[in-house]
Image 1 (cartoon, rainbow, N blue to C red):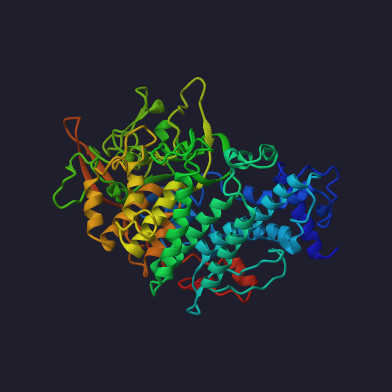
Image 2: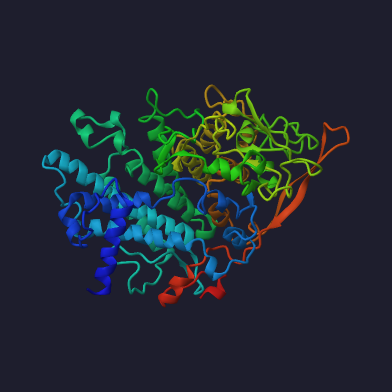
Length: 606
């Protein structure tokens, strides 16, 4: 057998071993790459395997760790690859993004096999013709949507200005070319990559149901092969969300130096389609409600547009975020810079010139936005079981004796803040029976689309004009600020009735520029530790100034009275010293494909 056949057989073996829900184990392991077309479960596995390739939690280099390479968080270990990326010391042998390049192209290869010559679509899956059509249309749509998804991941991670001065994306491959074979592709332009992703989204939309919901299935018998059982798979509304995110980045200053307004408009239109679906068709009894808090532990939480597959009874996030004193590892801590971004309880920022939020730097955690208390563990914060009165742990972050202070243990955060977001408050390792809940990753949420719409619509028509899209950018932000928090607190800005958020009204009246600042801050708060700020900072800027800043924590001292504290909130814990605004094309790929052009700023990786 030649090398290509061996590689293809190896791929099938990987499919067999890695996707038990879609491929039954072969008794002898002797099926060839051509044999899979004789077995419909294997053909479905070409699509199904791609979902297994996606992250399932936030404890990786696409989630919380990626925030640790921004001004949102500081990674405790100085040898962590993303810490070294942020400080300009990452070597070619440490590239944490190589695995994503490989994953994306392996997934694209699988769906290209399915799509080639419509072979997957023309496979007979079920004898009944109507049921067969339901299955094959869904799989065909999923294949296009998954290709768009993994292409978008490539573009977001690796798109950038090449050393040739051109804005480049990734090599577009729409035929089943083995990514591990003897290949030599050039990168397509950034604009060509955008066009390909959009085209695949539109192709997918023609085949997919708008969403996988039982109540949307009009023929009851179709529930055998349609409806909510396919929650977590690509659907029509997810393709609109992908388009919204692609257009939003393409419209941003780094990739849109001419400020083409049509790109902003496309981002707003697609985000609004998702919002409208959630507000109308998905807003049923027991379904989506825009004021409900995010439930990070419910894989079927109604505020999700597209989730990952979940990990059951998991404690990874709790171990990652809690300090050593509560049996955690404290691998990352929130920065003072992020803490400062949270406003006061009435919505005014802490640096309001008139201090209308009544911020007191001597008591900096009092009277803050409820979202702060649901996101950050701070000095003297209490971890209470299921947010009731049952105390599990009290944080002591003062330097003169506090058990959770930076430097006391290697398992304590360097910033004197620990992270509460994604932490299940019913977990206590001291309990006789430890309670754990599922964890999952919400790739696209309702809130993400509100933020995308607000940012884009503001650029097109300003903050308050609702005539073009049927909603104003201001209203979209009201939805974000109005929502309840996971610990039960009421939000800042009730959308109905009226508007009591005086600060939001004031900023909206000041026009596009002022409102854009507010939207970006809301996006920072809402998406922190989800791995989004890394890319947001890059698309919003045109140089390295906003990336390369000092990172701060809190230096805290217990006063002699044993009750009060002194705070230095300008305590520097690190620096960001990026040499490039872009991630590098993996060095291994540069070595084996001479046509690839490396991104600007990575001279030693070419």
